[in-house]
Image (cartoon, rainbow, N blue to C red; front, side, top):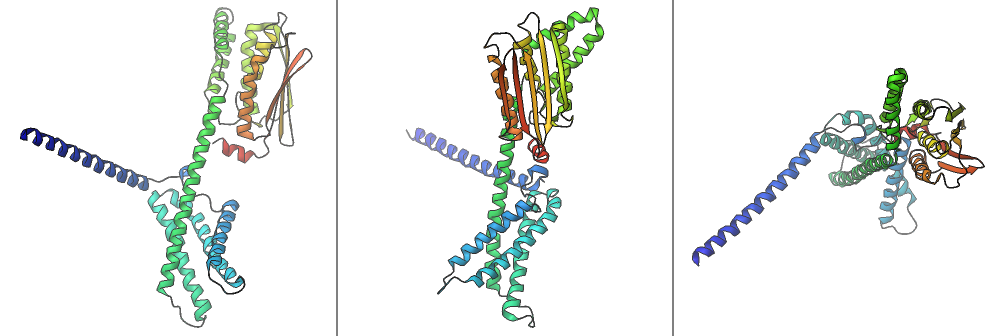
Length: 389
């Protein structure tokens, strides 16, 4: 019995030592991870401090600091009416610190991006704290002592203003960090969403293309080689980053290659007319935007008909708005295009994510023809390029 109790005590002590060792290891790993994080520089989009030279950042800082000043003045016990003089003097004091801190941090931002994260954070604290203490001494000298007297400082006032500056800087840096993390997460979610919406080459098209290439190798090797190159371009575009924005010129060349591949299969049954002179070649457009519309036109319009048909592509650019229309002849079956709805919805979702909520994709039956039309605005080209990176 005594031996069993000793063994139980030994097991309990052993488990306690294991838990203590695991806790020490976890704490050590957290410390090492934090230390590694602070030692590593973060440049580009990974840097937590935004561009404080931009008008939006300066306006945000001025408004936030003024709100803090108003709250501080309202919290002061006053007898009688509101002390507007105190609000004006406190606003002048705080705004000078905020604007000069923003200017210095803006100039130091490229330098801080090349330095370890811990050093960059320390530089932010030093700039704000240094300016706060400097303006505290200057304000006391100008308002209380008079400019004729030598500079003096009150340690209690310096400590109080310094602590307020440290607390506000910590809150602001935390806000910048959370905002940066939210932006990175939003971009990652947008990229994942666009990747899921990007059109995929259907297996039937791949098999038909390979069969056409095999049939051309013996009789027309030059056309077989061109078909292989066009098919490679399609697969390369299919594997491109879905969030990246190309141009209309690139999309048109890709679609011309796709139509050449289908031409080998359909022959004279497929006739294509381009009317896109009004659409500049450098117009922003995601890859594989027009190609699904052409694929739907061939699959649901030309292929079921023994005589084939024609496809007309019209494109215009006016006042920053892009309009691209694809129309094709189609059989008399009313629901022949119901399978194309998903492709149209995917294109509209991609355009909305990249170019804004005003983007739209429309489709309708116009007598013996079926029409698909996409419309989007690309006026703010710099904003669009920023979304795509």
